[in-house]
Amino acid sequence: MFPREIYEARRDTLMSKFDGGLLLFLGNGESPMNYLDNPYHFRQDSTFLYYFGLDQADLAVIIDVDAGKTTIFGDELTIDYVVWMGNLPTIAARAESVGVTNTRPMEDLAEILGRAVSAGRAVHFLPPYRGETKIQLMDLLGIAPDEVAGEASQDLIKAVVAQRNYKADEEVAEIEAAVSTSVAMHEAAIRMAKPGMKEMEISAEVERIALAAGGSAAFPVIATINGQTLHNHYHGNTMSEGDLFLLDTGAQTALGYAGDLTSTFPVSRRFTDTQRTIYEIMLRSYDAAVATLAPGVPNLDVHFVACRTIFDGLKDLGIMRGDTEDALAAGAHAIVMPHGIGHMMGMDVHDMENLGEVEVGYAGKEKSTQFGLKSLRLARELEPGFVLTIEPGIYFIPQLIDLWKHEGRHEAFIDYEELNKWRDFGGVRNEEDYLITSDGARRLGPRKPQTVEELEALRGS
Image (cartoon, rainbow, N blue to C red; front, side, top):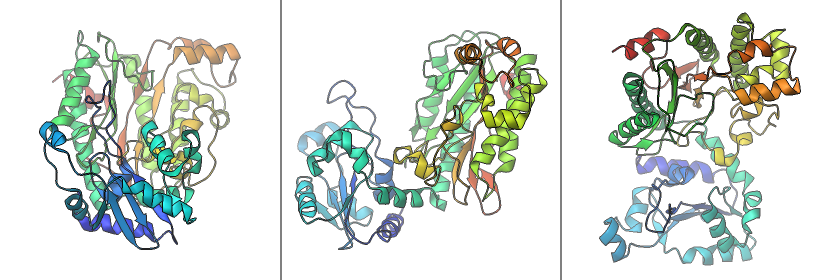
């Protein structure tokens, strides 16, 4: 945990945004994989961690804004828990470590909330993302599970986003630690990949490195020779000479902060000429996007800088054609770049995605519904303290090519005969993590090998 003063200051800032009412935070419980005593690895709710720092299951908190009082609810361990899982400090001791002096048993939570509701007091809570939490809110507040998200407090969402979007120095240090481990994960994968090896061997090694560093993988590993599938979690393919391998993975620290990197490299010791051509177009788009990062620049503009570079590079190959700006406005480039340039990052690898991209990444403004652009998670003006990813890619997706060709979509900008020659290429992506500073941007953690020369040097070692 961070020092208790950090959590106290965070809660004070949050309370200052409200005139009264209760702020309700429900920590996560254990989630069984296939029966009660065989749960998934526990992960505390990130906003709960942010304000209260306690990484244990089955806790809840009420901040009574009118009384200026914070109470942690939880039950003491039974002897059965201690026998099987080991001892923990008392609820009071855990609460005191993060600057909270009031604790109550969990059974008191419903009574206190019931009194508040009866008295007409506002009870603010965040939108739940687990079914168990929806049921808990139904029991506590009488809100049907399918109505809970709509009843979540917009005021609390905005207040939390306004704090968590801006990373303090101690958070940046944690993210850098996660990124440093993430770079080690990628370097190990680049060195070890070889023909005849299964994708799962790469996945196992990068997860081992994350665990050995005292954390875990921040999200399910993407390790694949089918880079054209953006979130490919199948790891059963065998690598062969001539394949490209795409690895998207990052470490999470013990405090829950994430790194998120992507590398693409040849399974052979060298890129083929065609692989190098596409990879270097993608890498130019990455460099162009990074050079654009600065306070006051809308990330939407950063996105289009990358897309413009990709479109022009493929136009030189005869795959794209026509006026670049018209093509970007129409969304023709999305046939090879169907996602956004990046996203906010912190304790959640897509930071606060459960609170909604409109608030987190768009500052309340409406999102586009255009294919490709609708997947841009961050479009708002960049500000000092934002941590974000930059991750352009070029993908040749046969099913998308066939669909758009059949529909005759964007024929003024896409030469489908030339594009079809690349349908079996796969996909390439490069990703690193950046902090927006007062005068620009700073890469977090060490630089990941990413040029053709750097990657081939590791492949040959």
